[in-house]
Image 1 (tube, rainbow, N blue to C red):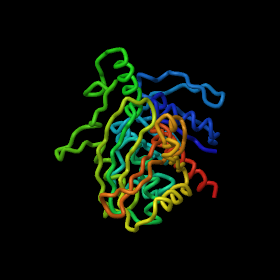
Image 2: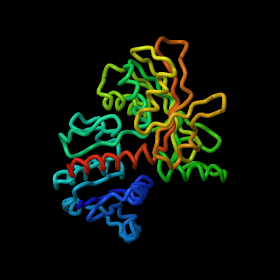
Image 3: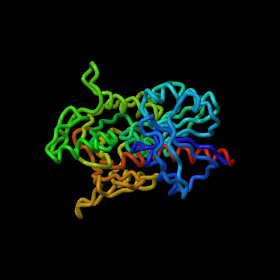
Image 4: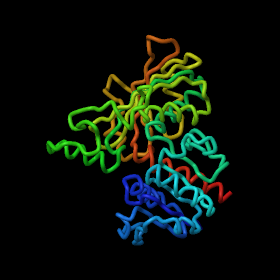
Length: 328
């Protein structure tokens, strides 16, 4: 059996990881829950067993774990992930701390597999995950030359703080997390601005797309926007392909790819929205059409639950893949 630890167990992603572990009945011999000192001592029921959340310390990071799922922020990950790794664990990290490290695998199970050059695996940005799944399907069949993203990201992408800001706005209160009110508003600003005018969130999507698809030649640009929606992100993907398939060809390729659900019938007002995707595991795509302004270019609308496939589920799928290899 397997010893598993979850760091950030009381956060929004950590809580969802526990629900998925329970729902999928992931096998383990022990499950240890870690958090900051503020949340230590809380009781969480998993598979009928009451577990007490422990404060993460350097000494506890030296314990014997097979797998550690981390969702506690970049600073915590930079400090503790190498300690868990040194003690023999494989760390699956949900922060941005390790994603662009050349020695670290950045993994979406439908797209690529970890090489385990190091025993730390990075979970990509939530919007990147739901974008590279359809892009991988297109790249395999038609080749991808260029991608332009515009995201519509829900407040749960900021964890409990983002949800709280939306709730405050509904009451007429000022935001505490976002730089502008989010209620009845959209904010074209996620993470800090860089010197080139892009935000860190946009840079993440650009760099992570190239790394996951293993193709630095793909031109990528992005604009990331926060919207007053509780759950599930939407991404408008404008993609230029090497070949020129028909729209029907694209729908068939996407529909045959793992995790993708095609919802595309404009005559019946069928297209995916955050309400369709919230709480579900799939990547939903629709509004698939040719871009008449550029050759070999198409519009694809992608919607997925950012806490599920965009974070917790993707990490658990990586864990499942590693566990299946162990069995082999």
